[in-house]
Length: 211
Image (cartoon, rainbow, N blue to C red; front, top):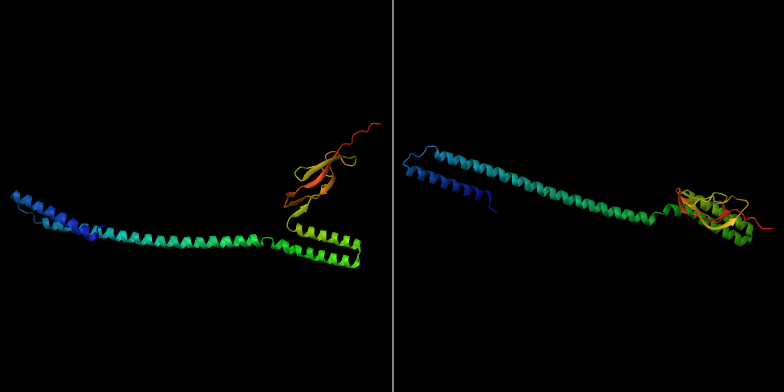
């Protein structure tokens, strides 16, 4: 690329050529050379030099601003990469230790189970063992309820396919038709959303027996 000085020199040569051509035309016509001709061309050259200097200054300003923008982009990109890597590490930690709280709540249940087994082994008292296991079950459910887990009370309730899974039908005079007669497996909901439906038997009207 040509420098600003080269452009000025080219313009000077062009103006000089135009000046010499003008002089030749005047001499050929035997006309008197205008006294202000030299000043006119010198003024024009000065104007062009100033304009080129202004343009060169603007180009330099744009270059400096472009360099600053590039540096800012690199800095922001590095910050984003650091942020992304930090989020990935935190996500990994959450996945790895996300169940820490619930496991901590269940540790007392494990302690109670161990104590119940020790007590039953020493006393050989099955009633005490049963009472201990029932206590542990209650403690276990209480711990899970802290995290939004609740069980369905299904027996005697109208059959609801959203929370019940019918595996059989049986005649019943105790319960109305399409009501749960028996629960084979308890159902649970987590934060009001069915986690596992209850496995149940549903009542149907008894058939009249022939005499």
